[in-house]
Length: 171
Image (cartoon, rainbow, N blue to C red):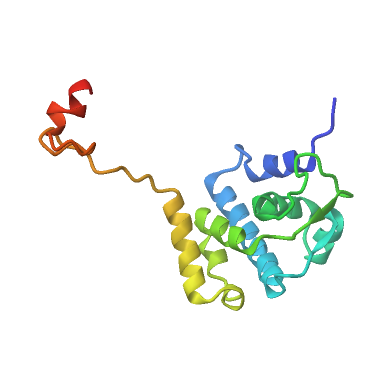
């Protein structure tokens, strides 16, 4: 029997179906506070290339290894080079070198206002850039349908005929 990976252990704790709603809310409330503290530190020096083993990073940020694994799972899609989160152990070398725009957009996508509204972002992006990134992310999930052609509208092919007598005849 194989041992559970760190990520599996984290997910078993974080998504434990045995816990009550209140217990899960308490767990995630605590985790989000920790996550916010780590992001505050990371965003203070956004160009610093933070690297080390999972255990070293947990120690650096004053966290348990499994909590650090949860953080690494959350930030992984925003990294310039993703970490091997599925297979990592305490001694796996990982990095926290993130793409600033992608991280901001992923925070918006996750509806994590406690993260994308951190004051540290003001030193990284001006207000216009933050608004643009926010809009881009929100629009990325919006499906826009083109204007529907009515039967009696002019055909979009440019023939000058009504749609029902032209291209709409075959539809």
